[in-house]
Amino acid sequence: MKNEINGKKIPRHVGIIMDGNGRWARRRGLARTSGHTEGLKTARRIVEAASARGIAYLTLFVFSTENWKRATHEVDFIMSLVKQHLTRELDFYRKNHIRIRHTGDTDGLAPDILAEIDQAKSDTRDFDGMQVILALNYGGRNAVVRAVRRFLRQGGVAEMLDEDAITQSMDNPDVPDPDLIIRTAGEFRTSNFLLWEAAYAEYFITDKFWPDFSTEDFDAALAAYAARERRFGTVAQ
Ligand code: FPP
Figure 1 (cartoon, rainbow, N blue to C red):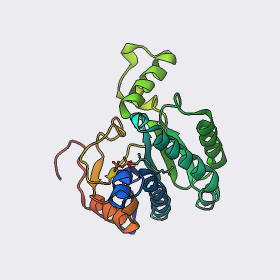
Figure 2 (figure 1 turned 180 degrees about the vertical axis):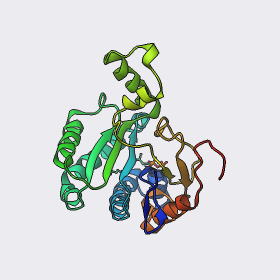
Figure 3 (figure 1 turned 45 degrees about the vertical axis):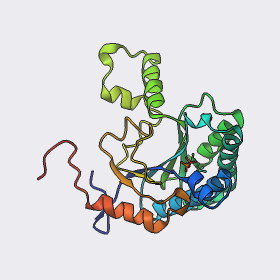
Figure 4 (figure 1 turned 90 degrees about the vertical axis):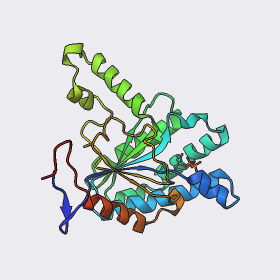
């Protein structure tokens, strides 16, 4: 689908792997948690920029199913940041008509976080601006397994199982596949992010640590995307 603003091709759905908070902090002799605090500020900045640029969907990889292996105090800190963000920034989301959604395994998330997510989802459900999808307790393989389970629970059988059936059984089936995935901190890995949905996504990788990622960097990613030719498996015209 053609999605353009002022003649420039813009991605409808952007996913971001926000990496490098810990390294950003370590470089400054600070605790890893300071990196997450700064990372949250970056997330807010980029949400605002993405909304202003007409992006329709933004998925942020906040916490993976593997992140539980981190020190308890770091996990608790990230969860408290998320909670704080959802309670304190509601006015910001309201002002910008941004809808908040969640993807990830709700099993394993603490009841207080789940309640906060549910509240934010319902408070913003009628907003028709950008949709921010928070990937929290998220793993790409886990998402596919949960989709297949959902399919089976709804009476699906082997003969009915195809790509579309899996897509329709994912957490947010109405959300289109990501067009662009941005990854900070220079790693060339998918890290189990949107494995199913990113089949034809373009990747943009920058060395910048997430706390240093600026709106100019975001614009550079959008410009790189605009310059790419997406072929979806066909040949160049
Ligand atoms: C990666 O840095 C970042 C995370 C594990 C998630 C933390 C994300 C935030 C605090 C932003 C939350 C955003 C919203 C909108 C709620 P890392 O710790 O893996 O860095 P490292 O690889 O350098 O150690």
